[in-house]
Length: 583
Ligand code: ATP
Ligand code: MG
Image (tube, rainbow, N blue to C red):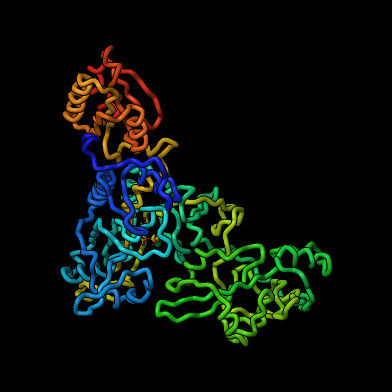
């Protein structure tokens, strides 16, 4: 490919809407162009990288015995109605109508379609196990499309689905996918962790995520020295033992004027109502946070969440807990509709489904029976001290919505947690029989009895991977592609206007291509060497060869984009040397 012909324009400036390095660099280096928020066009260079990632995924999926199919993105409503996802997906689903007014959707994921396809064609246990996959465009009307192709509203996913008769079979299919993912992410050169993705009531292996470690990632994960690793959304709180109620002091409401924050409240408590055993801390206070849940059917439900005052409510943990409902702000109208709530002084006294407000009240799991709290007295300017859980108030239940902090204990006792950020690249999930049941996917077992099939679903973010590779591999000059996914193996820069040198460069390029290398040949006659070097560094091919003045002594310069190392090599040896570094 000649640069003079390549459909690409490099840009000096970062796009105004770009927040993360991969977004800036992929636009600046001419790989993608934005069409609308979360919707991108792949330019020739970008499409080549996308194709390489797809190929790695395809090879590993084929190697584990999965077969490729391809579903349409435009789908009918009925299957998604049967599983309730037409409703559950809420505003994330792109819905449309055809000319007859029939409801359609753009597929966000294809569990329903795969289940129905297998139901259509297979009927016996002898047909199973089966794993099918596709590499296909998905649509989700994401609330916060950001970071370019890391979170698109249109994006490419590899999704696969396994079908088994027995639970052991599902376990095997799950492991096979998990192993294939390890190979895929190793080949892509990612630094990644495999984390529990849900709190996994039955041991937690039912769902795991592959997170690429990156500062810019949207997922926070935790790990302990003892080997526990989980998405922060899946972390369960280590619950303290309940405290016997006998002998606990009585609750008393007190004036706490001018204590707008937890810190000022704690200072005031220590001054006016000191404890005899130790000073009050923020962790002794119970903060009641109000939100509104918007359920998929559109109804709004207020919800109160009680967390220790030293912790915030973590929006993503909360979202996970209440899904498929979405979380909205509890606004002035909601306060007006609930006159029992005294802003800033809301306490358990007016919360709970049995209370005057009728607002469901869920508390942090640390709020066990017998714990003593300082919390709102439901009177302006007053707090109640020593309000005891299980004695003075009984919440409707608990919720894992408080933030997880470094140093918190791992739920499996493997030590304190440390926090880091990552990009979710893959997800393996034991679905079980939920979808098969909803869609009537059954086969005859050995005894001729109809049994419901058990399924797994497994996703890889193929387009996201292109951006995630860049997040882990760039410098101040531009992208540094790992060889496995680079659009071209070699970038040949002709650093001269001399027609003879140009001639030699063309021959050299032809020789590189003859040994099977893909070459980007910067032959632009009117562009200075400086600009060509900048473009080569920005575009990020792993090997750059400069053909220029050195030819007078029969030399070309071979540069390693990753290490910056340069060496002068005899032209006659250059093809062999470059081939050796590329393979
Ligand atoms: P996230 O938590 O990032 O929204 P998800 O849990 O909704 O992702 P899955 O439904 O598990 O994602 O989809 C499988 C894979 O598809 C994810 O692991 C991710 O790599 C990719 N993916 C999901 N949503 C997007 C998106 N909006 N843009 C690009 N890739 C995505
Ligand atoms: Mg996921």
